[in-house]
Image 1 (cartoon, rainbow, N blue to C red):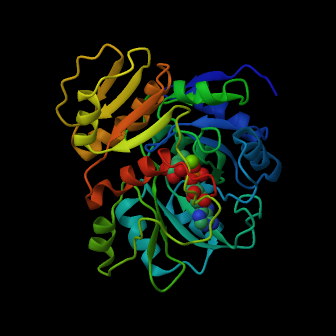
Image 2 (tube, rainbow, N blue to C red; image 1 turned 90 degrees about the vertical axis):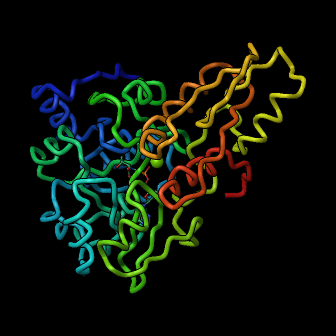
Length: 332
Ligand code: TXA
Ligand code: MG
């Protein structure tokens, strides 16, 4: 499967129309969202959805998120929609939160990996929303990276992982948010966060006026809930700022290159250290985190050291992604 991947421009109407016609032909296109780039196919077209799994090398039982144009379309995909879904949609859609609901009978099993639930969101991206409107269907779209690897936040990241394997990328520039959406399970009496994301526990509780569960590691038996994920090819270690300083104060093997991603003040004069400083505010940090990991992965380092982020509620998504990026247990 080697084709020339075309780069389309999300600011050009005719390129959006071309992306739409590729989807209508049953092919897949990488699309920009406010969180990360997605790999989109018509969620009603089983053969097209299967191509997503093949290109990503994703196991068939890892369910996909379906993106829709507006809350009004939700009943085309889900059933028994609880009132809290409308509250979440009113406050946060279009935006970076995905609702887990019961799927209706029109939804094929390929999209949901055989589960009777479906994950749905309305993305906050003009070009992607235009595509959804023109297509008048839902688009299944996981992050546009090879299975278990770092999610892409630019068209170039998508190219480096999937060039030659997909028809086209709709280039919408760097993603505004930079980490994947929050996933909220509203199928049960007790509402819970299945994946931490930009919409935090507190933001959800403030609008729902009830307390919700948000285990840092949830026990849901969902195949996509893996301990190892978002991984650079280079070994990545999460460590405190003190530990980074301690290592830098010891004699180092000058033959080896090390990458450091930090947000605290660091003076580092070693020639074999490539350090990248991220903003210390959560939004600024998460917007650039995957870019920094992608960049560090390309410098030939033997290890990437990442300063542990603040252990605060609104950093939970970053902590979750970095824990998985640095995990080493191969049992899961
Ligand atoms: O921000 C995002 O959510 C991005 C953009 C492209 O929208 N998408 C994304 O998709 O992160 P993906 O496939 O990389 O991650 C989706 C996660 C997976 O961990 C999957 O297991 C979970 O959503 N998921 C999807 N459907 C589910 C279901 N029915 N039950 C439980 N988890 C589900
Ligand atoms: Mg993903």
